[in-house]
Amino acid sequence: GTALGFTLVLVLFAALRERIDAADVPAPFRGASIGLITAGLMSMAFMGFIGLA
Image (cartoon, rainbow, N blue to C red):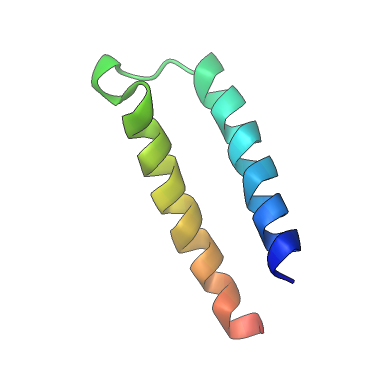
């Protein structure tokens, strides 16, 4: 359960970080700030799975 979900999040976040590194991100959002924005969007996406359990 939990370990599988954690692994899924790590793999997805790693894939997104690679895509972000290749993308043309504005200077104020490079680095940790785009990582926090991505984590926030992913957390909102995973909140949609609450009703499935």
